[in-house]
Image (cartoon, rainbow, N blue to C red; front, side):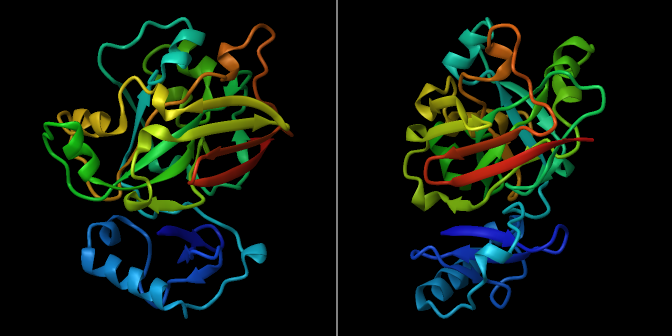
Amino acid sequence: MKLLRVGTAGAERPALLDEDGTLRDLSGVVTDIDGGLLADEAALGRVRAAAAVGDLPVIDAEATRVGPPLARIGKIVCIGLNYHDHAAETGAAIPAEPIIFFKAPDTVVGPDDTVLVPRGSVKTDWEVELAVVIGRTARYLESAEEGLAHVAGYAVAHDVSEREFQIERGGTWDKGKNCETFNPLGPWLVTADEVPDPQTLGLKLWVNGELRQNGTTAEQIFPVGEVVSYVSRFMTLYPGDVINTGTPAGVAMGQPEPKPYLRSGDVVELEVEGLGRQRQEFKDA
């Protein structure tokens, strides 16, 4: 299934995109798309049954804002330098273990919402990523297979980053990762049954119409199942938690000087194969 949330910011209602590409209202079936729903097989069964009948109310997709596909996110765990080609372009050594940092849930916005360039920023960068949404509580998992079994679904994430804040201002990466609007998510949460192999997905990102990133999850240093298992050994993962799994080569930081960092007025578009497409205009905070 392709689950999503539509409506004005803060007042989104649950919806699904059916097999014909029609947007349909789920608010008569479930109250929202969140960790509680993803952990409730009976509720998910009701959604599947309603979708199969095909008589859910139609929503005018052209006149409706698409919000983040997941409400009440617990935590966003991010994996740094998780693509061979991205590590190479930045001159970084291949990590021996996954690099973990966090984004606050309040950085999440809809897939087509405005993204704000922070005040004083000169190095705002783009990163298309595969987001993994947890559907079962995960503690001390022992294998990649177990990791995949705890995934509810997948989504497109834009891990917007401010490189000066991240690298040059001391401390951890978090200062460059948690600026307002720095995690557009969606448009859909695609359930795991529709993504039989998360290591075969293409990722692309364009800036002002120019293709900047064109990669594949096959380039991941630590595959999805291994990442989920690894993270579960350091913290408990709950339904509705999100893991951003890293970005392929092509970020501004990896380009020759002058590096083409983002400015107000730039338009970024990005997609992950089978998971939908985002479009954001950047404006000054």
